[in-house]
Structures are given as C-alpha cells and as structure tokens.
Image (tube, rainbow, N blue to C red):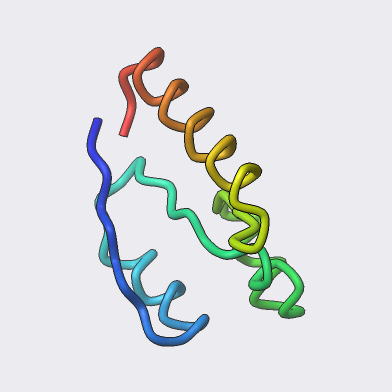
Length: 76
C-alpha cells in the first residue's frame, strides 16, 4: 500500500488526477466537491472518499479508518 499526495489548485483538477493515478487507488477529496452537481455525482459514484476539512477530528477519523482498511486488506 502507498499514498500519493497531490496539491491541486482547483476542484476540477481532481478529475484529471483520477486519470493519471495507478489502478486501485482511491482519491480523498474535500467534502464540498460532493455538492458540485454532476461533478459531485461522478466523484461519489467513482468511490472517492470525502473528508470535511472544517471538522478536523472527523477528517482524521476518515483517513485513519481508510488507512486501517488499506493495511488489513493489503490494497492500494
């Protein structure tokens, strides 16, 4: 398992990054993207993990849970 960190400048950059990351990788995006109409639906349907950056504890819990699943199932 590994983690790729990307510093994108706009919300739509995430869609381009999805095309270039390796197979079986799941991006983590800010929760606000989920409410961007068609883009949000596409992200949600593709399995992107959303975090609420304004609620620090919730974001840490989501990322920690994702890391545990990655280690347990030995997946990227």
